[in-house]
Length: 108
Image (cartoon, rainbow, N blue to C red; front, top):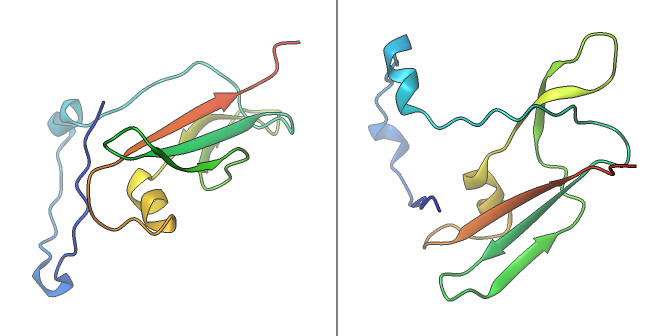
């Protein structure tokens, strides 16, 4: 379980930083070998409080970005999510919460 802290920042205090190729090993990534984008493919998202209470669920979640279309089809092999923005869209701006995404695709 990854813990993400969300807090208000003073935008006048931002410092731009670049990362190097050698820093990529520090970034979280997950490769899933799956074509995504059929009309019957679904994403669910669930927000859970630290006490385990489900605060919000969306069973046909659409707030994701697709990348790198698979050549010759309308399918994608990369989906990008923004948990911080998603929590904020549910009105959660501070505190500790779990956000879980489930990807569903019919097998048959």
